[in-house]
Image (cartoon, rainbow, N blue to C red; front, side):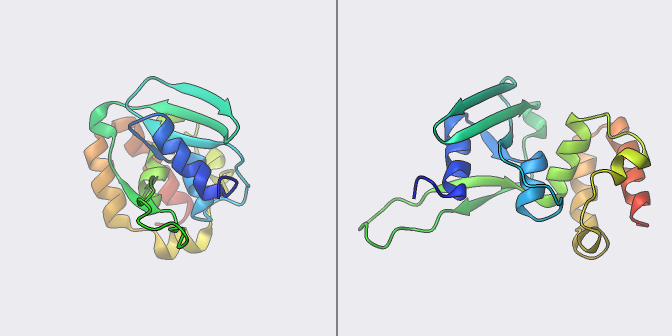
Length: 159
């Protein structure tokens, strides 16, 4: 169980709290980027940090407490052999929040060419992306620079 990728995700959320998995790691989990991501990148209200241990490489990007939202709990499968085993949960950004976190924390994605280099899954972007959730989260983040980058991203995908 300790070697499963989802256990490392659980460790990432327990090791440095509060935190949720986001950015390239979340985009990879959702299949939105073609690259395999080996380390786990999370968002936290604590200071930016990086750790490496037997469970993997973990990095945490700091955001203000008011930007700490837009994630959901994901449960690890329960081991049926262990009676009354406690539920183990890790936190994962919604895909829309992972995109916003990326554009907010990495402002070098500031033109359509750089945004195209992300190689986001076109089927997701044109069919599954929850535009209402994206807009709600974007408004809640309240950043004019982010708004410009989001407009450019949506333009890349004809949205």
